[in-house]
Length: 98
Image 1 (tube, rainbow, N blue to C red):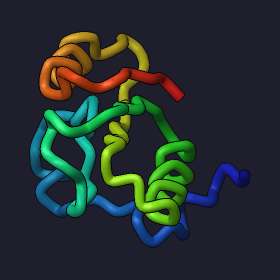
Image 2: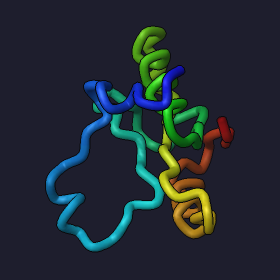
Image 3: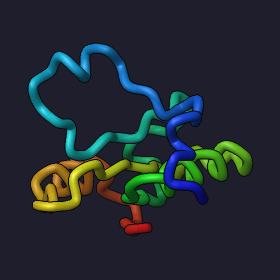
């Protein structure tokens, strides 16, 4: 794993509107277009950095659309309020930090 790996990763991109929004998004929700409804998700994985892209690649390979992968962008101070919102969204899921 190289520290500059994400500079060339095809999925590590931002929308232009994210740069004009004056606020940092502290936690990103799952962006899987094939994901199941929130009440059908069996596992939610919170992660950060390179691990996010490794996990979405693996999920795509095994077709696990019942797993939501959420990316935590701000670790300090930890965004407890955002994490709680997503935990409440995926009420029946097992919650994991990776």
